[in-house]
Length: 159
Image 1 (tube, rainbow, N blue to C red):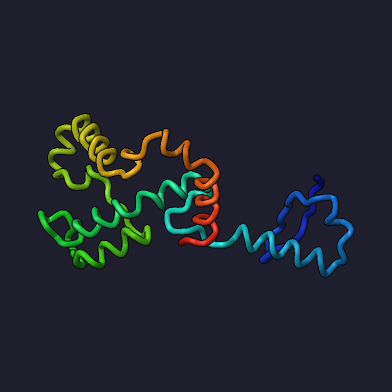
Image 2 (image 1 turned 30 degrees about the vertical axis):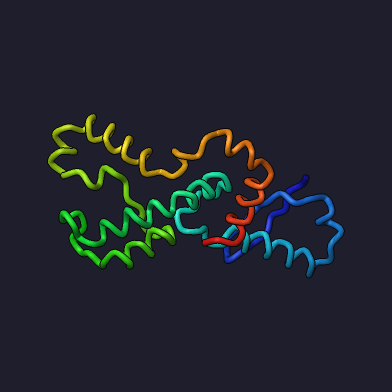
C-alpha cells in the first residue's frame, strides 16, 4: 500500500490507498478519495464507538435502556427534574439517544457518602439489568456465523 496526500474540505489529508488507485483516471481518483472521506466523516450511530462488536453489544442493551430511561422519565422518585413521560423516555432509550446507569437511581448523598458501595451497587444493578447477562457463552457459540452476520447488519443498517 502507498499513501496519497490531498486537500479535502480545506484541510490537508494523507491516507493509504491500494496500488490499483494509481491506475485510475484523475476523475476516478477524486471520486475514490471523496468516497473514503465521506465514509470517515459519516456521523456514527448514537453511542457509536466505531467498533462493530461494541456497537452490536450496545444495540443488544437497548431494550433494557428503553425501560430504564422510560422509568426515569416518568419522574417517579424525583430522579429526573424534567420528566417527559414513559413513552418519550422509552423511545430515547430504544434509539440510543439516552442511557441510564443504576447509580443514577441512588441519591446523591448516598453516592457521596458511600462511593465504594454505590459503585458496587451500580455495577451489580447494571449487570442484572443487562440482557447479555442471561445469554450464556454456549448460546453465543451456537450462533457462530449468524452472530457475525447480525453484527454486520446492525453496523450497516441500524442507527
